[in-house]
Structure formats: structure tokens, C-alpha cells
Image (tube, rainbow, N blue to C red; front, side, top):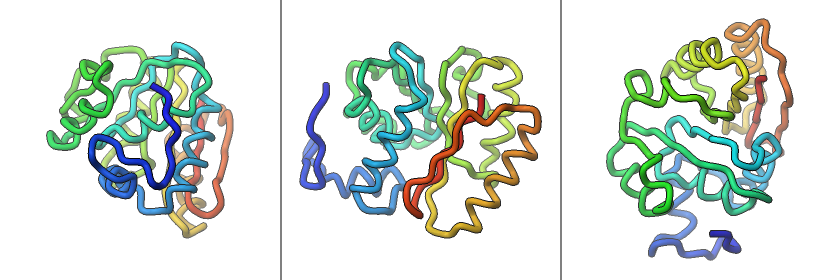
Length: 185
């Protein structure tokens, strides 16, 4: 499955720019790739990885491209059109991609080694992930935030402390001013 992704790549007839925009990433391709490589520092061989709000699956796809070994991707998104694209992009894992609301779907009842989610309190991601972490305490949680405003990163940090006061923060990485990634163990 590994391919050499470049800013000129065409995947399933769509440009990289289209894949990034449809996955809600608004920065340049180079920063996207740099942040994907960082995510892989927290994923091990054969880990079961759930991407909450997976959109068109491009995050999982790109992680698979750059991961030194194989992991098992799962994703959930409420948008049927995006899940359809995710299933086209990751055909061998299409049964692992669900079009459901994260608050009412089956993902919650399964153990994953890593859960990836955007940090966004407005959609309630931290509260559902807190419940999941209480249920499966060994799961690593990777929160990420795309922003070029450092005050948003500080706000994210304070909110993480509020939601996960007793958790050990395994790592925190910032790729330039665009992406902040916090791993909670």
C-alpha cells in the first residue's frame, strides 16, 4: 500500500489539494506530511487505531503510507459522502469505516490501542473520549489541533488538564505553528 505521496499526487482521480480540503486540513501539503510522520511516533505495529471524525479517510491513508510497519485503521464519521470516499481510499479496511454519530455508534464498545481525535469542545469530543478512556485506561489518546494561533494551543492545553487531570501526558509535539499533537496515556 505504501506510495510516494507528493503535492502532485493524484489518488482515485483527485488531487492532493482536494483530499486535504475534504479532510478539513487547510495548510500546505508539506506541513500535513510532517505532522503525519509525528503521529506515527505514537502508533505501534498491529495497533488498532480509531480516527474519530475520519472524514474522507486521508489521515488514516497517509499514516499508513509513512508508518514503518502495519497497523489496523478504523474510522467513524457522520457524513455518508466522506465515508464513501474513505472506503474507496482504503478498500481493504472498508469494513472498519463507519458512517455513524460518534455518540451513538458501535466504536465505543470496542477496544482500540490508539484513538485519534481533533480537539474541539464544541462537538463534545473530549467528553465522549473521557468516558472511553475511563472504560479502556490503556488506550492512548492523540488529540490534535490545526491552528496558527498559539493562544488556541494554550487553550487546548488548559482544557486537556481540565478533562484529564490524572492522566499522564506521554508526549506533546508542535509542527511549526500549524499542528499541535498531545498524546495522553
